[in-house]
Structures are given as C-alpha cells and as structure tokens.
Image (cartoon, rainbow, N blue to C red; front, top):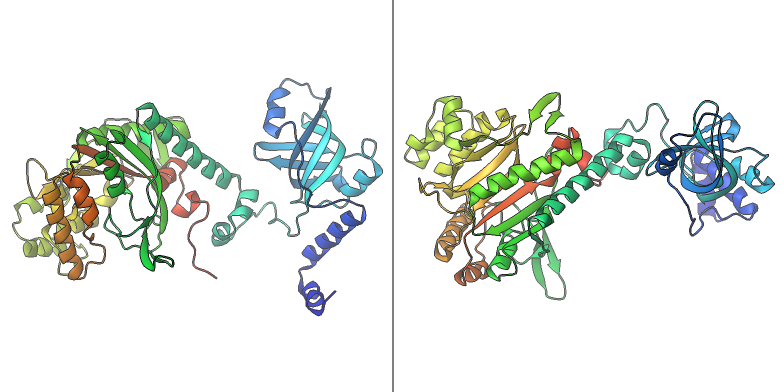
Length: 497
C-alpha cells in the first residue's frame, strides 16, 4: 500500500472502511463484487401480480431470478427487503437452502448492496410474498451507507446534487420523474395521432433567436466561431414549414437561457414547440387545452388537480381575456386609453410595477400585468391581446395594431403556454427585427437580433400558421404538486460547492 493509500485508509469513514473490508472478503471467497451481468426472470411487481391469489403459508414450485438493491436486513440477514424499479419483495436467506459459500456471502451483505437472487416463491404465514434464496449473486457492493431509514435524505440541496441517492431512498422523487416521462410520452402520442411530424433542429445557433432571452455562448475551435446554445427552436421549425417538410411539425426540445435560478426557472429547460400551417392562434388555444387535458388525465387520472393545497379545475373550455382588460379590472387603469410610452410608464410605476425608464408602451402594460394580475390567475385562462412591440414574431391583431395575435396560458399564476398567429410578412419581420436591434443598442440585452437567413426564408413564402410552446417543466410541477422546478428535473443546475 502506498503512502497516499495508507493516509486515505486512515482518513476514511469507519462505516465505509468496514464495507471495503467486506468487499475484500468477498474477493477472498473468489467472488467478483462487480460482475458483468445477471439474468433475471421477473421484477417484484410481476411476482406480486402473478401470485396475488397465493394463500398465506402456501409454497410454489416456481424457481425465479430477481435482482435489486437491499433496503432492509432483519434477523441477522435471514430476511432481506429487495427493491427494484417496480417495487419490493422479501428474500428469505436460510442455511438450509444456501450453499456454505452463499451463506457466507449473506454475512457480508449491507443495506444498499445490489444483489441477484435465485429461489422458490412462497407466501409466509404472515402474508408476505417471499423468495426462498437458493443462490445469491453480489452485483454491486455498496461502499457508502444509505441515509438512515426514517429520516431519509433531509438535506434538500443534497437531494438535487446527488439525485442518484435521492432516487434510491425517496419513492416520491422516483414517482415524480416517472410521471414526467409519462407526460412527455402522452403529448408526443397525441401529436403523432393528429398527424404532426416530430423533428429535430439545431441546439447550436449562429444567431440566438426565437425568444427574448440572454444566451449562453460557446466557441467552435475548428471554425473559430462563437456559437450560442439554443434559446428557442422557433425560427428553425418555421423554416421547415417554408420548405414544405410537413404542414404540422413539433419538437420536444431542450433550451438554454442565461438567466437566474428560482423555483420556476432553470437555465436548462424543456419545452414542446409546434407549428401548424393554415391556422391562426385561435386553433392553438383549443390545441393547448386538449394537450394539457391529455397530460393531466395521463398523469393524475382526472381534470381536478391539487397544487399547494389549491384545487384547480382543468375542464375546458378555459376563459379568454385581454391583458389590458385584466389590468383594468384589477386596477381601474385602462392602458388602451393611454396614448404614449411615457404616460404608460408613469401609470405602470403608480401601480407598483418595476419600471426602469426606457420601457415602451407595451413593456409598461406587461409590467403592470406582471405586478397586479399575473399571480392571481389561479384557474386556467388564456390571456390575449399582448402588445405588438413585445411580440416581434407574431402577426398584428386584426382589431388593434398596437396588439398582437398572441396569447399566454396561465395556471396557478404561471405562464404554461405561449402561442402566436405567426408573422409571415418578410418586410414586416425585418422591421420588427430592426426595432429589436435598436432596443438592444439602447441596453436591452434580451432583445432579438436580426436573422437575415430567416427573413430570406420568409421571402420564399411561409404559409399562414399558428405556433405554440408549452413548458414541460412547469406543467410537470403542476401535475405532480412539486414546489420547485428542481423537483421535476433529474439533474438541475446547481452552484458548485
């Protein structure tokens, strides 16, 4: 043993040191504590279902092979609780059924070890489905102890940093991430059934576009070129409509925005984004309701959910209200009657909105909405009438050119979906981009840059279309009653310790 190894052994936690000794004893018995594979015949839940009618005290003649992690050891190793991805099954380890070597192995097992077991199925007189172990295979000797059974992983931040440990000990965390998977699968299946084509678009962009956000920057060495992690797939998806790949396309995409952390924000997040030719944003409202209803029924089994102690009814149709109308109802201030940006800023500031001094009329209205209305929108609602000057990719409203044909869907005060009648006029789009560039020059770091190639694509003709984005992470939070976005992301972004 080298000097460094000896020092490490002296400094190691006694519990870990004891487990290393057991691992070495397994090797002394000729047993590899980290073998290559193990063939199993059943999972725990399969056996529970198969022998649901087996009477207490009854035995079967079926020999099975199961594998999982030891979560409890009782009676000096005679009884083990073995947990796999489907559930738990009891293992009975008795010298009458085991070889001397396997019986010695039992004495070297710890909670947390992964093992394989071969044996006959029975139900104990107390009614516990059990495998009488005839052979035991160590599959992974755990060198670190699991958190204490009754207190679990109490350090919430550690749960996020060491998600693998959280998943081992926390059934709620496992269920949340499994429900997320089912939610995404339900959305995908529903769209495929409606004739949408699933596509993939780049995650590295030459121009950060498709949303108002600060991007992450990286560098391509071979091209000596700065690139940006995708903030949205929108402009590439609409390029596919220009090209006629399909009339309906969608992508379940990972996006990256260089923004702060909060219970509802993670720099790396997932959204569903889709586009359909020959429809406008009203079709997207109906589709939003139908997709969220499908997700809710899949994850929760119904349309009445409970989040944070509040009951939310997802039964469609959901109300549709203009942003300015909602602000006027809440505050008495009608922004549609305010003619210029300066007056709008003064009105928004008087309502307690965060105003910096350079906001446009639309930005002032949005700030007032965020300050006085947004967090009160508990039941599902489509908020329409977004200002045109904060919607550079949406068509102007047919009734009022100050507004855009855009809506956001709110549930529990959160934006869950965002949709437009997509802007298809290349000259109008160029002018919108140029206005965004002026805002960027004035200090707005989230304003969108001009994407010349996208304007060129529009010049070849983009059919009228509706577009929709749904935030997968927030929707999962709602449908699993999770208080933080970190609960629904397997590996959330964390500040290094």
